[in-house]
Image 1 (tube, helix red, strand yellow):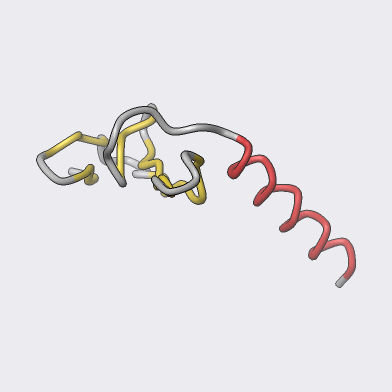
Image 2 (cartoon, helix red, strand yellow):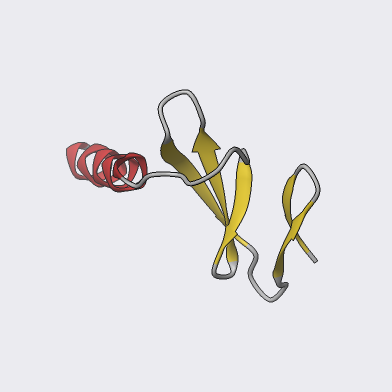
Length: 64
């Protein structure tokens, strides 16, 4: 259990260490959606689009 907690903390730290550019809450980053915390100007999560493609659209991004 400690190992799982350490790995989870590591991935959260890696995601939060990256910064966001612009004013969008969701943007495409390769084939995944990057979710930004605009107040802190950092990334707090990613979502992989899998076999679909990530597209930036008005108001954010989505997998199509």
